[in-house]
Amino acid sequence: MGSPADAAPRAGDLTELDELVTRCTACPRLVAWREEIARVKRAAFRDEEYWGRPIPGFGPHDARIAIVGLAPAAHGANRTGRMFTGDRSGDVLFRALHEVGLASQPHAVSSHDGLTLRDVRITAPVHCAPPANKPTPAERDTCRPWLVRELDLLRPTLRVVVVLGAFGWQALLPVLANAAWQLPRPRPKFGHLAHAELPATDDGAPLHLLGCYHVSQQNTFTGKLTPEMLQEVFTQAKTLAAAD
Ligand code: SF4
Image 1 (cartoon, rainbow, N blue to C red):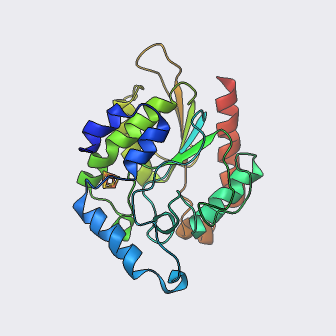
Image 2: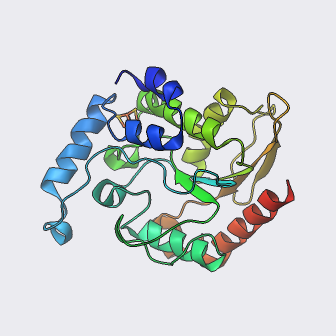
């Protein structure tokens, strides 16, 4: 298949891109980790077959809103094969998306649970579950071309990117610069409800960048991020997406 830098630009559409992503083996440490997790499993899921491969983006190919985290969770998406599906973070995320009309149902337990997204696609700058949820800078950079191409392919409709957490924000900025948008100087800083409008590098539409605290249990259990706060971000994303 070649490296992501070689393969991603050749993907003609998101179906092809997603298929290529799931076959990627460019990061030896992450390949070993995702397969080890899939083999050993967590006791609660011992009867399940883990996905154990890269997780492609999830959602319609003409979405106006993208949600970007950092990387899949070892026993969530790495088990189910779908972004944010099968863990506590996803429970909070999909409930909020359903509340604001962006998801067909509030629950996401497996890739066959019937959930569909409306006008929103969920993806990540790193497509494989990393140890301790921390990809290395080299792994992040190696994976970058997949997201650059994904945003290129979404570009005709994409107007808003909601970024979950500061790590995802830091990883996304170079992706945007490599895709079709200009980064202001100084670079926009992450914060909850931080908002920056990025002009396109050609005559295309600008992109609204919206910050949101990550839906991690650390944030949701402590009340740093409440369901109402999450819904407020997605409501703002819908408003911005509809305005352009
Ligand atoms: S993290 Fe990205 S580049 Fe690395 S193996 Fe997974 S899909 Fe490939």
